[in-house]
Image: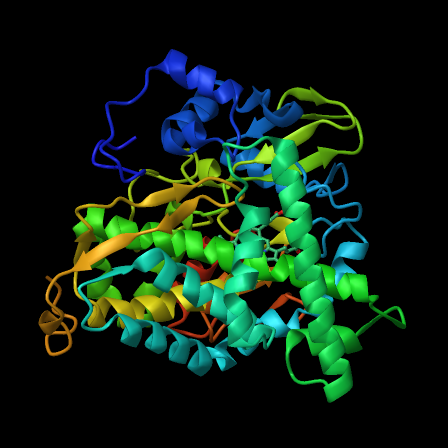
Length: 431
Length: 67
Ligand code: HEM
Ligand code: SF4
């Protein structure tokens, strides 16, 4: 790990020794705070000496850490099922749509929303997304301090999916966010059972909410929102069931906001720890071609989703390991993205990196449906934020709060701004 | 002078659209997430863009041959 890095935002002592790292690997979990805090050392040790590391957490699984293995596993849907896609599972009896579906059903459901998330449609939503970003920045203007996680990193993607895609009224955003976070970021202090129970209840509450929304649209007429669309589409001549419609929404909302929020919150924190990153980004933000490469590099460097599960359905040998039916793999995207076999100087953030075949958005048939939306959100935020928001530091009496879970990110980022008078006129000049 | 010809392996392409981002004159993706080539062989001046697309494709679905 490069010594200048301070990924947790705390003053970090020297790196844990390799026996400690080995012990951490044996109980690796995306829900474990020590896994998060020592991730770079853990992933490096895994790649170098145990590419199919065995963790005993949540009933045991293999942690897949090398780029080529993660890539290969993501393309073996014939022997690895995506259901369930998390370790531990959420406990839903039927696969979540589309993320837990396998071929041939997967493609049928995924094509239903292909147009809604295609690069062209996303481009058409640009003005609406930019308007959201502008509101968020105006809300910060002139203030001495703010919570950039809550007010920017989480707010932007949450509004993008709820407002732009689902047409959810503003009064319900906060409630939905809270319920979804119960599902996505279980409290590491609580047992799997307790967390599961709370997550199930939250899932039920959200389903009920979407049921009402659907009913309302059926009564008052469909609009151009995604729920209306899902209520009218057909697979093999059949309408979706209501449960399938809620199921789709239950995936799209958290997949749409929690991932992007975690990436953005970590980036906004990084600006305080490594001011040169902000300067480098400011220097290229107005060049669309360079910004395109930079956003890819950010997704490579800070992929918010630590890993997804695959479940062995046919006995097979994979990465020199005999796998039996029921064995589980966790595909570690962040580790793959730092594999020196694929990326020269993997621990360096190189904004014009090329080639850059990172796996931050996954790979294969489950390639992130929202990747084009996420890219555009990140781009627009950078374009507006870097010129219009002054530099800032973590508030002296506070510290950033990291969360574990199915994404790794920062849920509280209290900052104090430098002088607001320095931005605007001098936009683009850097610090 | 030799020319470059682009081929996309449809079985590998998963619609990341990185090819479009790097070379919008040469690639597009349909709503099913399949990319297709807009101009073949590569018009003069677009050679670097074509190579950039190849290097960006996470599925390694693009090949470029000299003809
Ligand atoms: C920076 C932001 C994001 C990152 C890093 C990210 C990452 C990922 C990854 C790694 C996968 C693959 C999961 C697997 O292989 O099982 C995935 C799938 C998915 N993502 Fe994203 N995602 C992001 C934003 C979004 C957004 C904004 C949306 C929607 C609005 C979204 C919706 C989905 C859906 C629906 C899937 C499942 C696709 C399928 O199974 O076919 N994601 N995402
Ligand atoms: S970048 Fe590769 S996988 Fe993505 S659309 Fe282009 S050819 Fe297909």
